[in-house]
Length: 132
Image 1: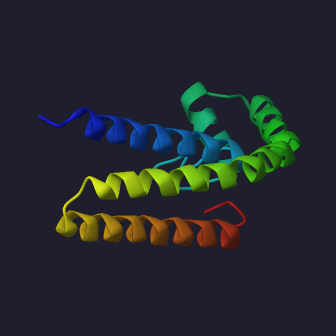
Image 2: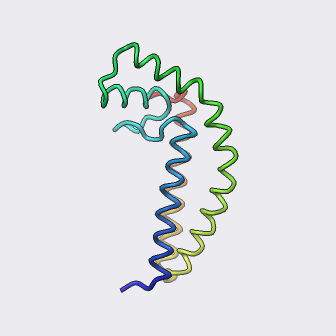
Image 3: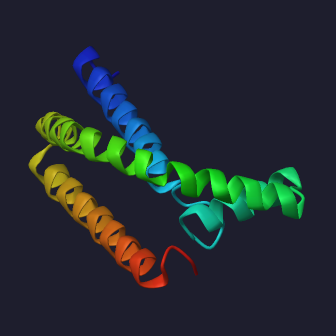
């Protein structure tokens, strides 16, 4: 049975991922919004439209709301990002300390793969202007 420090580390790691997802969603008006992995306000409006059966007028209003608050989301994320990155580094170090050397190597590869996918998604979103 795992000891309390391992459970606490895993709980903290899960919390960081949840907080990061929430912050990322807020900053980008919705991270991965549909099954094709599209991002941004148009993808979020499409998802809400599908899930809630929005009328065309509602779609336009929701899209305008996201556009109106875009700079606020960006400013919020700019303030939170350094703290998030710092906490993420601490958590990753604490998790790595609980692992065997072989597990640490595999954990590092998983983190690198996740970062690579995040950069690819970010680059694609910028190239697509947030659309697929």
